[in-house]
Length: 319
Image (cartoon, rainbow, N blue to C red; front, side, top):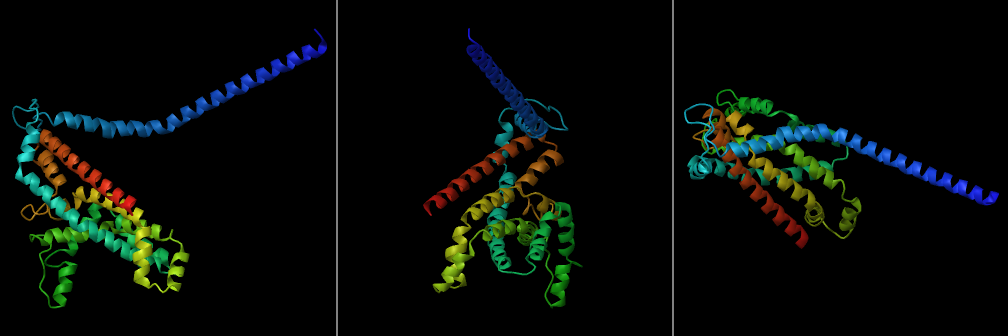
């Protein structure tokens, strides 16, 4: 064998060895990266399983039992009895109706108000950040703080709102103890509390619209309302779909406002479905019945969510 052939063989062997070493090193690097990724994900995955999946499974099992914290004959398998009782209970459907009324009224008010205010704030050139902070600030309050503020403002004797009405020569209103008015009071509180989130979503969408479109339409003679109707609203369609979906789901989960401000009264006129579930489980101690009711309500929310997502997506495709 010549020296040249031997040199080629040595070179080929060295090249192959280096390639194998690089491949092995790359495999080790990818393996370490995967392990590092699992290290970051695992704590959240465990929390998800422990605090979400496990309670869901246990709650589903519990709904088929006469599971109660007190009483005799408890923890016995009763099949679909809890579901049948919930579906026949007029109080349950009354709470569902209260939740639907709250959702139907509060959602359009929030969407229209947040859109109008976002358009107004977007036209401001100086200190726009101050408006953003001021309008979003209520959203950062906890439900307890919000309820304390508004329960004081709604007080019939010395509340801020009735004091203002009295100073104007108008009679005071029983904001939280009068049927019909109590639900309107809760809607007002909810709009004030959650308005900032929708407002910021719309404001972010408005700032993505090119100013050239407005300038070109102004040259063509379009007024302010025409620009809003034919430019702003169509280009904010995606934000509107997102806000509608999120707002409907959030409104159907009404609990804290009604529970802390009115306790579901007067005459259960503001008791939401989640408050009904809470009363069943933690006031009447019927945990199995409460679990069954929660799954019925979950199915109702799922149907509504899928329906509105399908409808809004179809509207977007047609447009």
